[in-house]
Image (cartoon, rainbow, N blue to C red):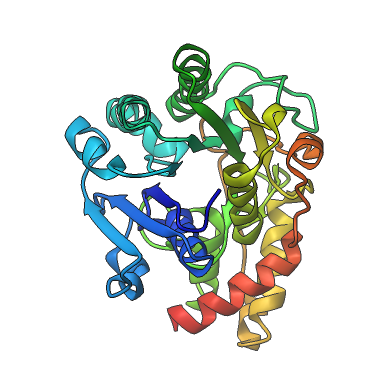
Length: 325
């Protein structure tokens, strides 16, 4: 992969996408960002607007013409654009399907027609569905538990068919509960870490779904950036046209998570340690436990995650304290 290569990041104004844009520009690549700002924010990328190596395409992956425009002259695609959130997909499965399946297919077709060298896309740990086995191994999945999970699994099926039928190299990264700087704490579908951080900073009681013993493989953004870099640049032919868990490989319960957040935030404001934690009902479509095996990524991509959950959480808490106050 040449440093002068042009990389398209779809959803590049979002949480993960904007971090990838920043990383790629710092590494010397030219970056095209495609976003419709439905969940992404202009302020996440505004520092790049004067950078000659950065180009913004305001468009929607549901529009094939926008996809074609975005891939013009592009060597590689990092496809991050999607409508996340299990609850959102349960409330509105039609829009989730339109963005995550039709939009994904539009991007694959545009990338194929433009002769893109490699298509790396955001897959999801939700694909494991009702599979009870731990840790999660890429080749063993269950039935999806939400419309969102269905869409992300269909992405993998389409990528596999396109690699076999049209010869486009595809790599899927099954993200496990990614968190870090720029993850939005606001809105009805905010992820748990930024939501709880904002509530604790405001001395409001976070509400944990269920008894708090559900567990997740919380994954700091730097590990996700590293996996995208490895997927983009690998020369190992055995490493392409497959999917990888993108995680740290460690399990944390929601009760432990809130404990860590209170501990780290109370260094800035001791009163946060006294905020009461509440419990509500379990959430429809939630998987009880999630833990990734990262052996495949280590073996084929040379992946060595640099941040464990607690170190990443300290970094994220510091960022939120500086940016939410």
